[in-house]
Amino acid sequence: MGPTAEPDPCEGNPDCQQALAELYTYLDGELTIQKRTIIRTHLDLCSPCGDRYVFETELRQVVSMRCQEKVPEALRNRIAEAIRNEMGR
Ligand SMILES: [Zn+2]
Image (tube, rainbow, N blue to C red; front, side):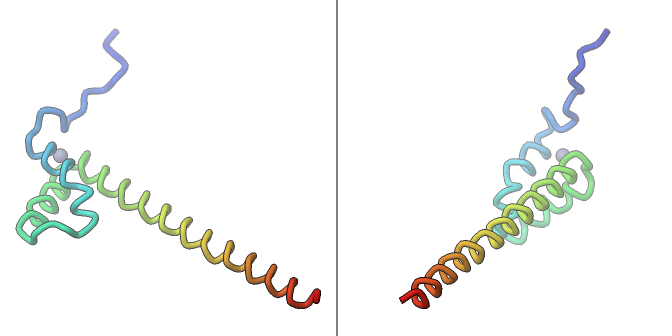
């Protein structure tokens, strides 16, 4: 009967617009203490925005963990190859 898409409770709310617009800057730690407090308070009070914050935080952790795993492996392969070349002489 109704449309399948649920209305976004944050849409049209200027507090949410601001919190989401500053979310990445907040995660990067580049906001002033005053602005951090405003965003932090909103994330605590508004669960849709709080969920988005948790999602972005976890996404960043996964990405950084994958990047850290890749670098040593490539390095290890290169070292193993160098040792093999050295021993093959
Ligand atoms: Zn919100």
